[in-house]
Image 1 (cartoon, helix red, strand yellow):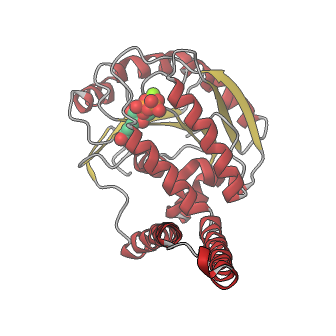
Image 2 (cartoon, protein in one colour):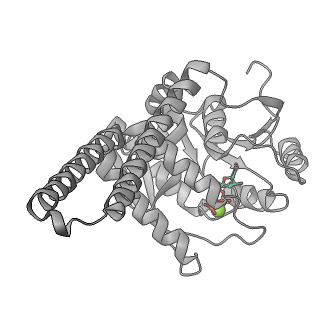
Amino acid sequence: MAFSVVMPVFNEGGLIAQTVGALVQALSGERDYEIVLVDDGSRDSTWADISALCAEDPRVRGLRFTRNFGHQAALHAGMQAAVGRAVITMDADGEHPPELVPVLLEKWRSGAKVVQTLRQAPRQLSWLKRRTSGAFYAVFSWLAETRIQAGSADFRLLDREVVTLLAQHPNAAAFLRGFVPWTGFETAYISFEQGIRTMGRSKFTPGKMMALARKGIIGFSVKPLRLSSLLGALTCLIALATLVHTLVIRLAFPAQAEPGWATIASLLALLGGAQLLTMGILGEYIAVMFETLRNQPPFIVAERRGFPTER
Ligand code: UDP
Ligand code: MG
C-alpha cells in the first residue's frame, strides 16, 4: 500500500460523502491507496454514510468508536489502522482541500519524512479562532522549546517511519502538533488557504480547544512548574519587603503607624492566590501522570467496515 488517508469524523452526515468524493477525484492519478474514516461517536447519519462509502469503494474503510473520544484519539486510531507507507491526516469537513493531497505526496516522494501544511485562515474564520491559535503557538513554542509553525493543523503527511515512532509512544498521540516537530525529521511545509465547510458547524467547542491546549503544554513542558516556583519566590520577596516596610514605620514613626489591615489583607490575598495557582499547576501534572499510570485505552472501537479480513 503506497499511502493511507485518515479522517476523523464527528457528526458530519452528508458532508463526509462529499469530502470523500472530492478526495477520490483528486487522487484519480493514484492507484494504490486506502481511505480510513474514523467515526468518533457520531449521533447523526455519519456511520450509515461511512458504511455506504465502504460498500461502494473497496479502498474505503471505516472504524466506529463506542462514543466521542475526541479528535486526537480518532487520529490515533486511524493511524494505527492505516498500513500505507505514508499516512495523510486531514479533516472530514472539506476545510483541508483534497486537491492538495497530490502535492503532499509529491514532497514525500522527493524525500520529506514529514509534510506539514500551514493554514492561511480565511477571512470568514472567527476573530477569536484566528487570534487564539496564533497566541497559543507562540506561548507553546516559548514554554516547550519545540517550535510549532503558526497555522499548523492536523493536515499533514507522515512517513511510515514517523507513524511507527508514534505507535511506540502513545502519549505523543495526545498532541500530534507538538510531537511531530519535536521528532526533528526533515519537514516540507506547504501553505494553503483553508476552505469553508459547506455544511454543519465546527465540532471544536471552546472547551475542547482549551483541553487540547492544556494537554499540549503539560505534555511538552515542565516550564510551568519552574514558573510557579519563580512566582513563589517573587511573592516571598514582596512579603519580605512589606514586612520591612511595616517594621520601619512601626519603629520609626510609632505615632503614625497605620492600623495595617489593608496590608495584611492584600498580602493574604496575594499569598493565597500564588499558592492556589501553584497547586493548580502541580495538579495538572499529577493528572497527566495519573492518566498515564491508569493506562486506559485512548479509544474503544465498536465496529469496523471495509478492512481486508486479515487486518
Ligand atoms: N472531530 C472529531 N471529534 C471531535 C471533534 C471533531 O473527530 O470531537 C473531527 C471533525 O469531524 C472534523 C475534524 O475533527 O473532521 C475537525 O473538526 P472541526 O471541523 O469541527 O474543527 P475546526 O475545523 O472548526 O477546528
Ligand atoms: Mg473544520
